[in-house]
Image: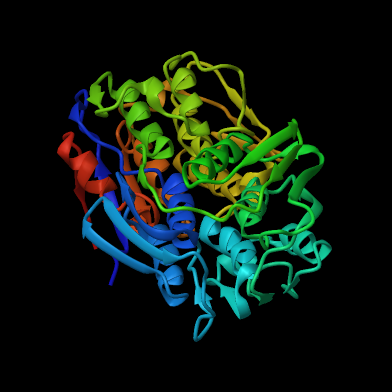
Length: 423
């Protein structure tokens, strides 16, 4: 039974110490899938062990992939180069990466696969990906436009050209790209993936996908800024090192500037290739954050930046964040509600923009507030930052952080943060 709530005690001192973020969730789930699709044994090191990656691993195991976990940060994955039909539906919780990526990959299975998730995942859109799969002649359906998805495969992915609307999520593009090498060898044409329009949520995540694919032996040609051609190479097993999670690092970078501390993440700040790492330069400007922050290419860093903005010298408007409304929860609304629960008028939604009023005098006050996390790990972790400076901040459902950062509360404690009212 998870804890109902956790109240943070402001440390009243700089946070100083070493705190390693976990492995990247985004890269771990890409590498798990590609290793599962490869023939042979791959060793993934520096990996994240969390709810999201567990769901991916269990789904692959249900389709005949062998996965061993010799330690907390390693997966040893052995595949045959082909996924087998599972005996039942694949349950993926609220793991967006696992759900979107597998929806495309299981089209290469010779048989029927149902991809499903929890009540939150069943509200997250997958329609554009289904439309693209159908356009390729593949048999996939999601009657509600969200999971569950039923895919009836014939043993190979499809070749040809397909356009995908990636305005809601870059994960649709990544899903198609990673399935591309599974086209039947000798097919008349490779798979060509093209954006319908130029809008794409967090393009940098497509770059992560391409880098992982190439590490596992895929060949992808970027024809232009909106088109990729994927050769039907299949995948080969390889050993793969996963970098720390940049989204997780944002909480530690923010904790450092909020408290005037020094937190050694064990990796240089410029060593990250993930899109959210660009938040470091913005966080470094605190308490003089820009008046407008475009969150479109670092979406998972926006909750961190929004809570940090509450203590900024001047107001901050967050733009390009419409996609946050279809994440694990409506994060724009959750941030607005949480900030206004701390102090009425601290945040305002204007269309899909979020305006944070900012009030440096909040620091040092006691403002009892229960923060509804909506079972969203990023809402829980970002509002913990408010508790470093304001007394009385209580996080509801604190164990939802196990989705991507199971040790989060222990990591903060190791830096000198205490808690009370743990239930």
